[in-house]
Length: 99
Image (cartoon, rainbow, N blue to C red; front, side):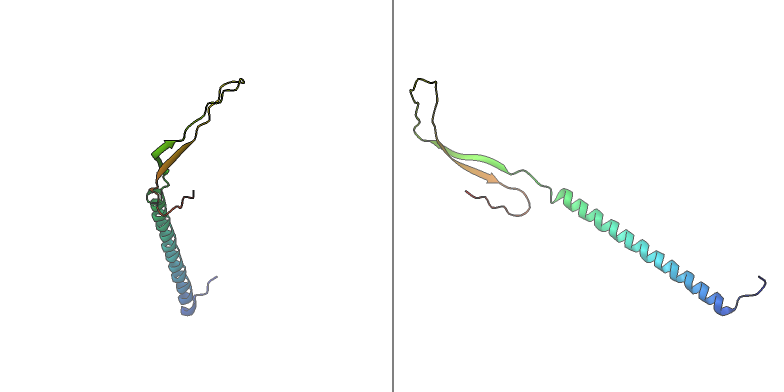
């Protein structure tokens, strides 16, 4: 258009450009922080917080006297077992087992 820009217009344009670059830099820092935090959380979740199946072992077992009914319709057996189980839970945190 043939008109020269004033110093004030040139200064405000430069100021807007600097603000835009600052915003882009802060946005890049924010994105990098989110990616870093997500990576740390995923590593923690996949290694430390990995769910393991509890291990059940029979500690002792006793059998009560059993019966063999002698009716004519076939064979059957009635037996009761009392068992103490040992549970090893290697997961992070506690778990309560009810009787």
